[in-house]
View 1 (cartoon, rainbow, N blue to C red):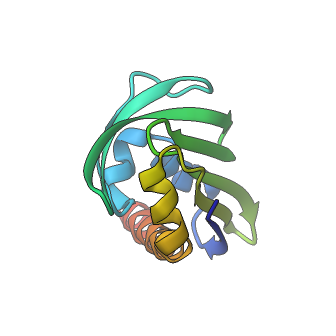
View 2: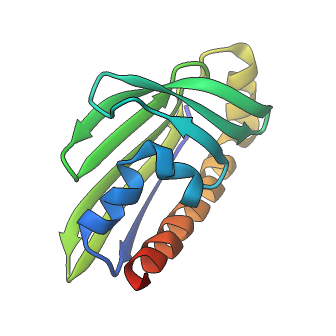
View 3: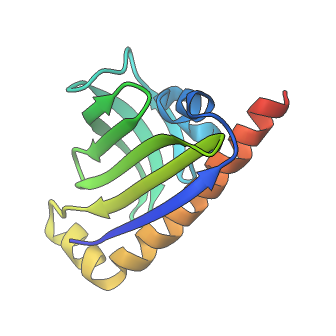
Length: 144
């Protein structure tokens, strides 16, 4: 099972970042590889439809909200591939400290092979791009 974890600080309040992280329909605005997401109402235990670019092509899948804690934590898991993303947001020094982890619990032989060959590198790059996308979108939102 591959995973990659990274911390970052973004100079905007947690509530502003949560408007982007906690609203899955806004994920395509900042989250690389997410093309579209539709959620009737975000709550722990629910699932929603998402379209994203993966190494195996464009995938439409169901995503489960495994953990949702106020404006602080969001844990999502792709029910088809086993890919998961976890976001923790904490108020820190006038901005937001982010602790994020992306990884894969492979569900098929195909995803197990991908994980062994490229998983760690894939999730590192995707998480780096995601934090930069979130930073850019948050600063644009505050400036508007």
